[in-house]
Structure formats: C-alpha cells, structure tokens
Image: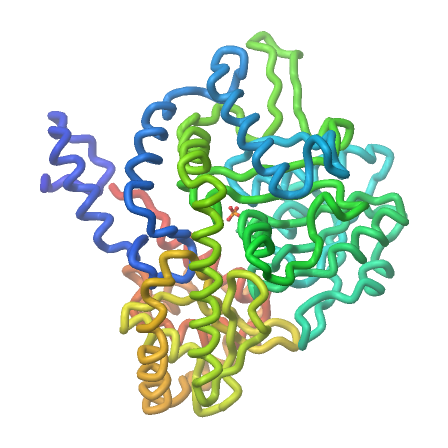
Length: 490
Ligand SMILES: *Cc1c(COP(=O)(O)O)cnc(C)c1O
C-alpha cells in the first residue's frame, strides 16, 4: 500500500486501480462484518447468493445518472415510479384499494422521508406561526431532528412501560389547534412494537390533522409476515385517517443504502412537500425531495433488488426472519437474569437484565468478543437500559449458535461483575450542565476512557457513563466525541 493511503494527500502520481481497491479493502477490514448473520444493527442481510453482485451492477450502471431532472433521465423516473407503486401496493394503496390515489417520492433514507413528511404537514398550514408535532416517546429520533430543523414544536406522548405503546387517549389529549402532524410507528425501532395505528389515526382525523405512519423499519417486513399468518394489526392505508407512510427500502427490502419511499394518500397531501424555484438566473429548479443532485445508483440497485427477489423471495426471507426471531427470543427466555422487553411481534428482539449482578453493557461486550454484534440502548424515562437485535434473514443460518454464545457471554458477564464507575466520573456525568462540557474536558475524558484513537472493543464503561447522564449531557458528550473523530486526515 502507498504511504499516503487513507490520508487526504493526493498522490503525486495516480495510483493504479487495483492498488486503490486494495487500499479500500484494507480499510474495510476494520469494519464490522456486513454478512454472516451475526450483526444485529445497521446492516440488513438477506444472505441471498448473487444479490450483492446484481445490486452492484445495477448501481454502477446508474451511478452517474442524476435524479435532479426527470426529463433528462427518464430511466430514473421510470424506476422511481416503479418503486413507489410497489411500496404503495404492499402498504394498502393503489387501484382497487381504499387508497387508489396514493402517490410518493423516493428519498435517500428514512430520515429524509420523515423530514419531508413533517415539512409537507407544516407547509400545508402556512397560517400557523408555531406548528406542533405529536409523537410517541418511542418514535424515531429523526422526528426530533425534523422538529429541530423545521422549527416545529415536539409534543412527546409517553409510552406504557409494559406495552411500550402510547395510549390513544394520551395522543388525543396532546393534539392542539397548532398540531400539524401526529405520528405512529409500525413498528418502533427500539422495541419493535406496533403502535395502535387505527386509534391514533382516528383521533388525528377527528381533529383534522394529518397522521404519518413511520414504517421505515417494518413497512417491508410486516406485510409479508402477515401473509405468513402473523397477527399483524392494520397499520397501512387500509386504516382511515393515515395520510402518509414511510418505508425504507434499504432495510427489509434488502436494497443497498440510500433509498426510502415516502407515500401520501393523494397528490394534494404531497403538494407542499415539493420545492420549486425560478427566481434566479440558473435552471428552473423543482425538487420533490431534499437532495437536488441525486445519484441513480441507489434507485437502480433497489429496483434490481425488488425485481430479483420478487414476492416469493420476500416471503421466503420473511419466513426465515420469523424463525430466527423465535429462536433468538427462546435463547433470551432461557437465560437466567434476562427478560424480553416485549414479546416479538415483528423483526426485533429486545431484552433487558433484571438481575443487578448481570450488567447488560458488560454482556454486550462479551457478545462482541464472541463475534455477535448487538446494539445497547440506554435507559430512558422509566424504561431500563436494553439490548436491541435487528433480525434479518441471514441470521436464520446462525440462530442455533446464538443460544450457547449467549449462555457463555452471560456467564462471563456475571463473572466480571457490573461496571463500577469511579465516583468522580459518575458525579461528573450526573451533575454536569451540558454547557460545562467543553471540548477540552471531553477530549480529556475520551483520552482517559481509551477512546482517543476511536472506539475500543470494550464499551461497558462508556455506556455506563452515558447511561448515568441525563439526555442533554449524553447529547453533548456524543457530539463532542464525534467532533474529535471527524478531523481531517492531513
Ligand atoms: C431506520 C429508521 C428511521 C431512520 O431511517 P434512516 O434510513 O436511518 O435515516 C426512521 N424510523 C424508523 C422506525 C427506523 O427504523
């Protein structure tokens, strides 16, 4: 490898293609494995032979095509319209359904879809000077981001600590004259439970307010699970009052990253999502979504993935996923000291520890050490810290290995015992005001915790520290830390 590899120094002489690819492969070797069925977050792996190659070829064929202008590149318009129709059909819309006029847009991801759902709802009510958004506490953090970016006030409805769902009456009570949008999740990312969509949509409609169903996670999984016989409650356009739905194709449609669909029940609902501008000397601009120049790569790759897998493929993958979820949940139930946060009703297994001698964050490290990558979730309100597993079809081939690995990791975590934070650290986390967290203080803290060069294998101390801190301090710590990581590679 050349000595400037991985730095920003442009080589004085161009590096041959094969060596450049070697450099990238070398960098990639530090990443968590995207295949193999032992990574329970970030990556959605169907474990289908040949699918990567197909998606890559489709991506490459359209990578330089620009979605900025659908008249210049009709191929992209055609593929987007196909993706929107496929998503709409799967989610209770299209000809012959209760929502025959569904329209939509392809976006770059779930966050973009949610930002646009909030923007469309806000801009449909231009007379409001202080618009508001009602979300269950379990709604994705992207809604808080949307509220922040768009200057919309967030009204958070608590979730029941047992069902992990909001009460419809509480949602109804949170709706005010300034509310522009009410949200339900199908399912929530953290726990994988489906909100009472029908009830929430009904109270929203009764107040004349839009209702968005965030099916970013489950929109491409729940319909197949239902066809396989799972008792999935109504959550899509079949529910009166649901005005928009988001579904991420880069999750359970198993497309490469960078593609989500935002659907609206009709064109009038979608209209305020668009931005057009003609009052400048350049090209007249109309952007249905946030990005202006958009690569055709993710769209073509998603199109290829959907067509290649087809209904039979998605049903088969959903069956594997369902079986994997059942196997993982059994392994959790069989572990002394662990408890499922909720009975799995989608593709998430989420558990907590109810034995003070078993430290969840130590357990996460022990699982990592055994090659199983799980996602710790910090305590929130009256919910304890938990471990989240996003289950995808590729896990099915590994599920038999999980129970012994979990048992082994639980034993190791018990042997290690819980993390004991040095009292001064705990006091710091619990007692600091966020504005006291200067960059210097955080840099010193990161150094002391062994985080200076990146993220170490053992994260239990860091997670315990974050867990002890109030949300505002967590946010500052995280932002300062990532600010340290993101520095130019001179
Ligand atoms: C993943 C997810 C999002 C955000 O999607 P990104 O693609 O990460 O931007 C929003 N809502 C839910 C429920 C999700 O699971």
